[in-house]
Image: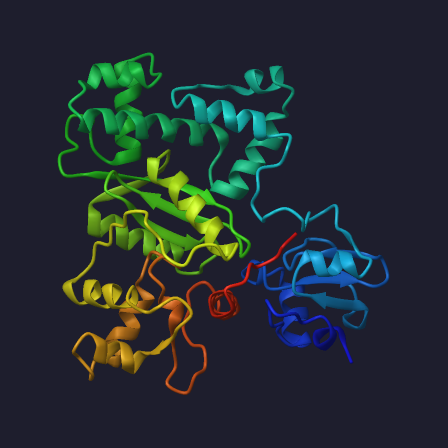
Length: 363
């Protein structure tokens, strides 16, 4: 028997060897949390997206999680760190991020980083990789986010500028207009969506929130993520900026409890702008019980429009709040998994977690 057969446990079903080796070769992050690859010739195990040189197929053994690989005598790779959630902040950067989180107005230049024992180039590369922007841009956008919120709550433009760390009104005005698209005094009707990354056993997710609730939760590597963001911008007349929200801590805690098998429902407030039909479909998704599934046809019947199967499928695909609005619980009429923006193997793993009510082990 090969390892695909011998190492299955009650919490996970592995893909076939060809699929896993292909994912390993392509460094496919959508298989994060689905399997780890152990290399017989080196004695180490890696996450699917490891950048190390790929071994020959016959030298790879697959396990559903790190715990199983360790139990079989393998040790963690020092390149991809499979014992740590993908996207986790490295230890050397943690103090800086904590400092930034405590002060949204902070301004730090290259020399400031060096004084903290950090290499500015290394910091810039990490932010570009994880956030798609430089560290300087990240700080600037956080300041703009704070100022935008203050202006919406009737703080004067002048006070908002100086309270957000700007030294001149002209510099603030230029930065604000470049980021938001309008002058600080002309933001009526606009929204800012604060965004952050939340780590999960299946890979990092991008979360977005306004003052009303969570409006975005997508896997960070979803191919359609940029399209979804653009649709959200247009629908809400909004911009997305790095920032904080009181809802993020609640969302993170509820997601961790869900993956640990300790939560079956979510309480964090949601904001779901969309058409009347989309709203109806998304509301129906939230009535599917934990551990259950429905077909697209059953979903169409549940909203009183049995002929609208394709339209229901499209609305499912437009759902911007994964897991909490459980579009992963909708399957084909023949019982096969179809259409999940985060990847079909993630969909399968989510259904396994829910049907067995067991934790997904990654340590």
